[in-house]
Amino acid sequence: MKPDLRVKLGPLEMQNPVIAASGTFGYGQEYESLVNPDLLGGIVVKGLSLKPMGGNPPPRIVETPCGMLNAIGLANIGLEAFLKDKLPKLRHLRTNVIVNIYGHHVDDYAELAAASRKWRASLRWR
Ligand SMILES: Cc1cc2nc3c(=O)[nH]c(=O)nc-3n(C[C@H](O)[C@H](O)[C@H](O)COP(=O)(O)O)c2cc1C
Image (cartoon, rainbow, N blue to C red; front, side, top):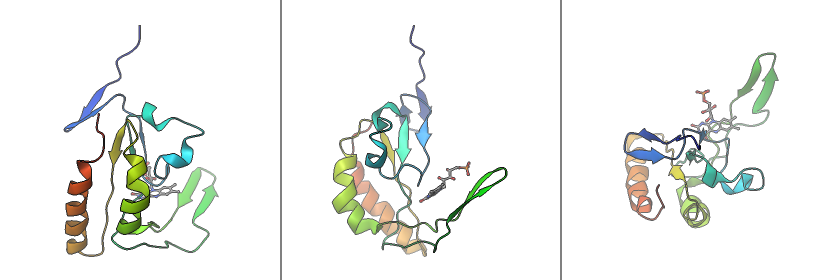
């Protein structure tokens, strides 16, 4: 018998509770040779700002005796490149895509949230 792993997170229905954390899974395509993203409950794509951000200078990840520390600095490609280069591929995924936005001012959040409302309709949701 196959266990039923489905969960609900607010209005989001997920086939299982495993979500790839933001920034650790790129935009889904980068890990396709290792894991099929469609098998996950969802992926959180890299934090997205209006303009591209280079992030912190290296070293950005260090090992410690109890794990690792990271300070990537929210490096990301920015809204325009996300819409042009990443969103079309994300449309083909058969899992939940959670977009994580951030800004330097409340207006940035408003603009990114408004943009996300538009692309939401074009993503395939489970
Ligand atoms: C290489 C790397 C890049 C990351 N990039 C982001 C990011 O862009 N946005 C974000 O919110 N978190 C980012 N994170 C943080 C992870 O999402 C976070 O560590 C993960 O959710 C673990 O959550 P926890 O700290 O609650 O255990 C990044 C982590 C790593 C290791």
